[in-house]
Length: 258
Image (cartoon, rainbow, N blue to C red; front, side, top):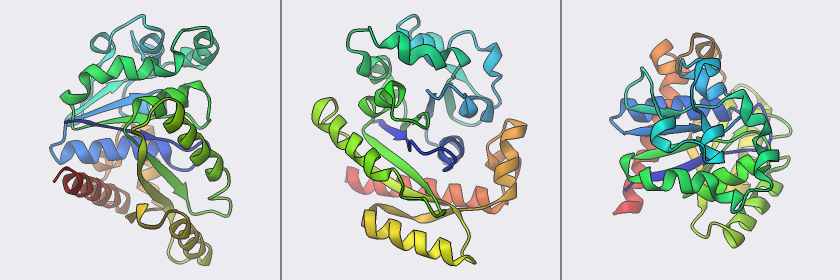
């Protein structure tokens, strides 16, 4: 049975899209069938998988507005076991267009739920905000994965995010739970990094992944080549970290299923 994971944090620059693309690639390489849904108007997950955002015929924009079906919107990528619902710049106006739409918070859920079991994991790359697009991601998912960067303001806004998750659970999606918290931009040489990790663990406890994503040049370079880091430089520290994260997530979900 498939699982839908929303990757979300309303704070930008935390490695959210980097995580969506590279976790998808690592899970796919480990023989898991993956659907990546890009609902961020910036479309970086789409271009990070080598798809030209300007050339897509159907995107998550049309899917949310009910103009296309999931099957019509779906694109196969050149990377192992990864299918994509691409984003488009038109998505920037979708929040205004959805305001008057009935059941607007469940548009994504209604579009993907019937195909959930065709995949081992459906990953949703949410925009860096708590607007209607992210609300659709939270209403569609089983769990939320939160990337947090090792910087001074790491926990800023997280209480607001968790309040929003609790509200979504109460009002729209009673099954939503926290999948895990991922520490990104990790540098063990810095005292600040150690302090931030301690604070994150104090806040989230056992939900913090044992894998941390390091600062890594190859990880930063890979998107400009339209590739996940695994395909750009498999031996890099960034690639190794995302493979370790993928294995950790697979193991955790295996334990839950037992």
